[in-house]
Length: 269
Image (cartoon, rainbow, N blue to C red; front, top):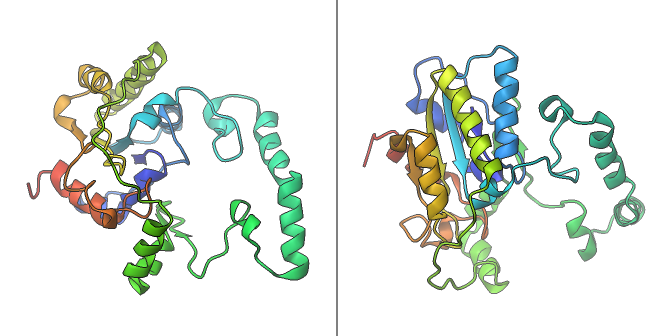
């Protein structure tokens, strides 16, 4: 299982299987802005269902560590089967989103006139190249890859011109306080992995902002998990220097993840 936020989608199951035992079956169990709360609940759900947890890839960053409770909003709320919380509240989040005046106006406007207006960009996506998913592995393949393949220079020139790829100054690690909730969730994640004797790797994502992962959090991770299984790619390094390793200023691309897999499974240092 691959766990993490949408940033973990740089890692594809088909690439990861090259490093796992023969006949392994992988599933990408991510979520938008996923946090420790979601990762733990998913592991707990798999364990409760009686499934084996043999190999695990956990993709983290400071934002992931900050999220230690169920978030609100249709993009983020955890399903009741995972959270154990109200099913009514869960479905109401989606009903409210669909009935929001701004969405309804945009939907009716486009339905009647067929014109994709600028204000609709925050409501629904219209592109020559859409994202596609693998319904067996839950890997998501971004349409951006096709855009880059078609005209890489035009793709990046546009984002640079719009200021998406901003100039980065040397930045020290942000000092986030390690909370009790964070420690408890990490320990519970560790305990499930330990019971299943899972072979795991923890990856700290290489983010465009080049801000190093919080040192206090790294020390805490090393106290709970096997230090040899933790790999920190944050800060300034070979992956974070080039804009061509990113779709925009938040998500890195699959070729970066493939190189990371080589490193963490020690096949090509």
